[in-house]
Amino acid sequence: MESAEKHARRNKIITHVVLIIVSFIMLVPFAWMILTALKTNQESISVNPFYIFPHNGWHWENFATVWKSYNFIILYKNTLLMIFFRVVCACLTATMAGYAFGRLRFPGKKVLFTMVLIQMMVPAQIFIIPQYLMVSKMGMLNTTFGLVWPGIVTAFGTYLLKTGYEGLPMDLEEAANIDGCSIPGRFLHIMMPLTRSSMVSLGIFTAVFAFKDLMWPMIVCPKAECTTLSAGLAKMQGQYGSEYPTMMAAATLAVLPMVIIYVIFQKQFVEGIATSGGKL
Image 1 (cartoon, rainbow, N blue to C red):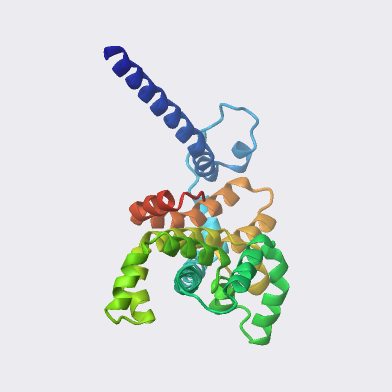
Image 2: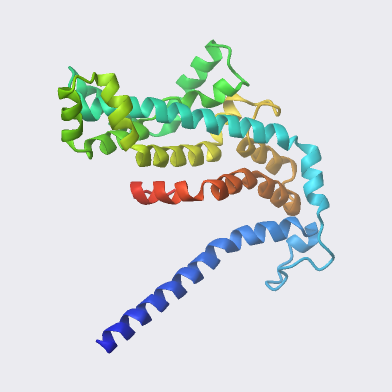
């Protein structure tokens, strides 16, 4: 008995040590980014592996240079609006479509769901030209609507919510049906609240994918005052191609919104990812 407890304690210690080491390894790029943002350009390109911290003071002016060159307030606003509306639209459309595919019977159900699965298998780049033409014809270039347009409907979200609805017991809906509850009533008051964890997972994935989206904002919103953080960073890379401290300062400012969102909604992030079993 004692040997078993010692073995379990030793395994627990080894597991924690490994997790701590992996955590430090994952944090190294972020720490390096912040430290590089505070160096001079000569210090940032030094080949000395022990040249980690700035030797000539902390150069906070790199952040001021980037902030003056690009209006980060507008970039923050455009990015957060895009993330917010994409999350709302994705959760709204996916939960309704997922309920229809997962709990209802109607003609052409299998064919329509097969089309959803095909859309998941096809690379997203194929849809860029048709989506751009639609946004252009509607006169919505360089607008928030143009940024949100590809995320209004999500095939992945439909599949995720369909799986969530199929995992719920049929007894709940059958009891509501016996009591005379209509299909919209069963959906709104009984089934949808039970898929909260799936919607949280979808919201997390949608927010992360929207934040990382680069190609679509660069195409549909080329103007600097209408673009997002990812597209703005790409333009900064061309402008400050050899000035690594300035580029790292811009990258540090760009990741701040997601860090703040994660700190505020940390519990929901962990719950959603653990429930869905997915990876970001």
